Amino acid sequence: MRTLANILWFILNGFWMGLGWWFFGAIAAITIIGLPWARACFVIGQMTFLPFGREAVSRRDLTGVDDLGTGALGMLGNIVWFVCGGFWLAVGHLVWGVANCLTIIGIPFGIQHFKLAGLALFPVGKTIVMR
Image (cartoon, rainbow, N blue to C red):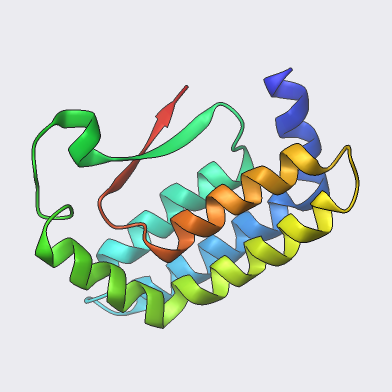
């Protein structure tokens, strides 16, 4: 079932949002300062192409240990990311989520978009795991 959902997701709207993540990653990669966000964009973009069976979790919750991205610097990184690109990616996911939720069949896809919108706002300190 997960494979079928990922195929439908990719065809219907995951491809475009994944490209959006990669676009912001390419912009961030142009500068040296943006390289950490660029890597995160490419990883999250890959998840956006096929999200079913994957989940973003806090590294603190996963490992039980604080690191650079889960502390004060991580919060600062999330603020910078929100201003530079996170807001627009979140808006894209929200628009697609609402559009998908207009049909009963699209509700699972809309829920995935809402999860990705939350991740788009504050990705620093998160990691992608398989469920």
